[in-house]
Image (tube, rainbow, N blue to C red; front, side, top):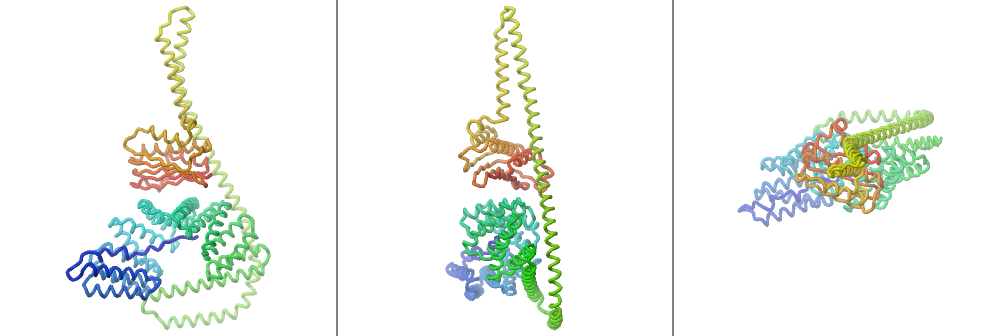
Length: 640
């Protein structure tokens, strides 16, 4: 599963306000401006020309010490730490980083301190020291929050999310990504918002929340295109494809993975090409097209081996082994599985080497003699294993042939059972949705019957009595008082008005005559509530929708707006309707008191239940984003 991670480093260029102010008799603004330019050069060269980066960093450090500019000295130390971190020299990055941290704290400068803590967190993260990275990130997060600096707070939240994602703790990732997402939307930063949507789509796939994976990935795909990030857009498309795969919607999974593959080919993103080929091959396998799957896997392994991408080469070999076994080609199955095992062993050795390197960094005094003895023992074991390998290969071949046949039969049996369970679950869900809709219709019929009985029925009964009195008098030739006739006519008029009101409740007149958008505008215009400002934005709805879709969306808007007015204590309410090729999006967002979404399933009220039932009729999606004192965003998507 691919994630886009923008490099959220503490940018020194934007963190040096001290360089252009607070001039002393010994220093003039021109000197500070020169030092700032050197620090900018140091940051600019940190990847492309590290020697020049270090040259400018030390030049600023020496000048700052000579002029007793302690704030500039702290900036120079942080610059050197960033350069060493960018080059993978983590011991020196930590050395200069902690010196910058000490000086920033002595200066009682919380912003410089927070920036330095963030760099130390990044260094520990890249070093693989999860506890220390978490400690420094969280301390920086607390300081940015106290300073009220939303943009830096969002940056550190993303760093924390990336840290937990690297540890596989996906449930811990979601709150940090959501915090960053909310901040970037509030600040009106569409590119950063799109990156967060891409990351949310990825992490929701790992937590098996496939609906949310698809929802955020599709939003990211659109936003990245609008912002011109076309080389990153296929990452969101492949995430959407995997989300659809998790939902069992293999046709849509195929479409989005093929779009992602075409874009990656256009930009020659070979590692991503190999990854998407492997995922697309699994989709074709589910669609019953093993030959197409085989072709994709063969290309994926070729591309992965060409660029030296061990992970993708390993995954492709493993799936090819299963394919050959399914074709009863056990010789090729064995060869593919052997290639998979070789790469897996290589990756294990590389991981072990990284672990040993981190251990040596964290502990300065290693026990070299014990390490040499361990290496001698490993060599002896390897020699013994070489003698046994010939025999083991023969045994493994026999076991593999038998195991492949057994595995194929078990796989086929499990797939049939899984398909049956999935079909049963879908049937149950459809039955429940139908039952809920019927219940809602029954409640509506009972309400209308009560209105007719208590309102129209009573008025017509009174009118009938008056008309009978008039009829009796006329037959007897008696004079009829005009007020009696007027009263009968008035009762008939009131009955007509009552009947008309009930008819409009069932199907608004504006919806019948002028269409959906006009009906919504008329509904909003009739709301008499000066304490709340309501705005409506409509895009792409020039043509009429299907009658059922218009009616259901109109009722959803009625229910949502009524809930906000009754319960949210909001002063503003924004409604947005957008029609696109994929479907119709509806958002209702307020700045009210919000609520705790953790118990949403258990505490769903009748209003929200009605909205969910109506969306189920259109096979749409519903997402609610809210928290106490944070307002509420209700998002609805109805596919075409």
